[in-house]
Image (tube, rainbow, N blue to C red; front, side, top):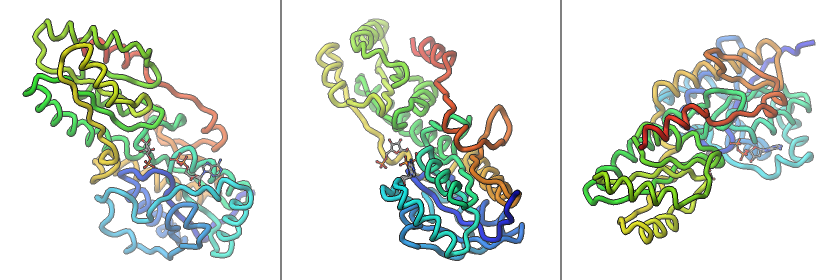
Length: 324
Ligand code: ADP
Ligand code: F6P
């Protein structure tokens, strides 16, 4: 039997992502429009355990759709991975009358949401991460802004790389996944794109490629290296020694997580946030919102966490053709 929800809580958890504010705004305004009360939980699960809980109204989410980061702040919380922490979290939700909760974050945050759902708090996950590494969904909030930010930065490195006729290794984020690297690599016309999912650790083939391109008269050589491979600085030293081409490493770092969200991120975040609030209003729990094959859908959290996805083989093959 589905439970009627009176008060919806919302939190952001794990790494922040541009568009999270748009998602928070959509949760709050949709819940209010459906006649529910809304509470914001600050600093993810840590803030839940610390009872940092605030009432939210329409004005609480005014003027935030264009802002990067998350107005609710975010955190990683070790205590919440324990059974005691989860039990305390569920009790705090009940104490504050929160009977439905939207968790905006990645797979780790969804595992926490699943635990709360099992303890009687109706919980829905919304995919928010720049890494695009959530298997159940083709889109994660923040990815589009992050790849555009990284692409702009790579274009700038390219200018100086060409002027000095250098090789540049640019390291982009993505944790263990290569989606950011693949997109930025193709979009910036990189000569080599190194993805953790496909990397052969054959540095000699990169070196041979650089030497062959130099012979063809190329003025620079851009290598996009994913964080999951890393070691860009030592790689640059080895490549310079082997090719004689001056080589610099640039690690883009956290600038990729900031900035005003793109239209695409605001749009997906708005619809996904609203969809999550509506699932709670329908009495649903233990589900994740996703965008799959052109449609907004939802999956049971366990099913979502068991799904697998991988870099597209065709996109990877074409990335190599276009780079040569
Ligand atoms: P993301 O949500 O981006 O994958 P993390 O993996 O860092 O980020 O997870 C965010 C938070 O979710 C963790 O700090 C922790 O509080 C909570 N979490 C992660 N895994 C679990 C788990 N197995 N059980 C309960 N909570 C978890
Ligand atoms: O998950 C988003 C992400 O930015 C990853 O790309 C990166 O590996 C990680 O978070 C960095 O985390 P932190 O902000 O804790 O350094």
